[in-house]
Amino acid sequence: MLRGLSPLLSPDLLAVLSRMGHGDELVLADAHFPGDTCNARVLRADGVRIAPLLDGILPLWTLDPYVAHPVVMMAPVEGDTLDQSVVDGYRAVIAAHHPETPPTAFIPRFEFYDRARKAFAVVVTGETAKYGNIIIKKGVIPLA
Image 1: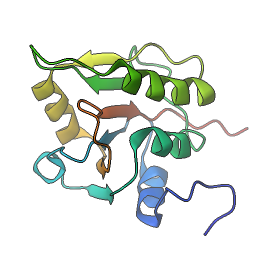
Image 2: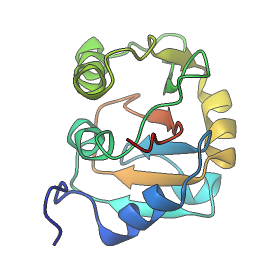
Image 3: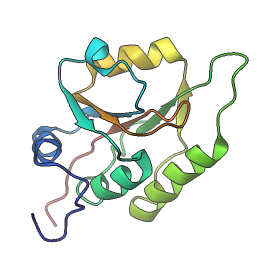
């Protein structure tokens, strides 16, 4: 146990977060996401919802301010709907830690999978909200 860190952050996740460089992406995926199909570095956070996990991660590093969209979510497939409360919950956490973050971008499902393949890691969570997947891009950590 470490002081000042969310207990939702496992030792493996902390190691991944610290090894990531600026511009690296982290996927926080719902419980149904094909993590092992999309990436060789998959961590499990079973039973943990994404919003509280974001709340544990975002105080530790910055979101990339040099890209148009450091936060990306999977867009619903035609005919499906996105639960706006999921997006609002994520954005509330993001705003609490990084209020200057641009709006979330939404990309099609298979484009999201392609990004997940290139991501530094995928964290498969216990999130059950449909289209609850999110990609966050790490920025440069300031010295002070």
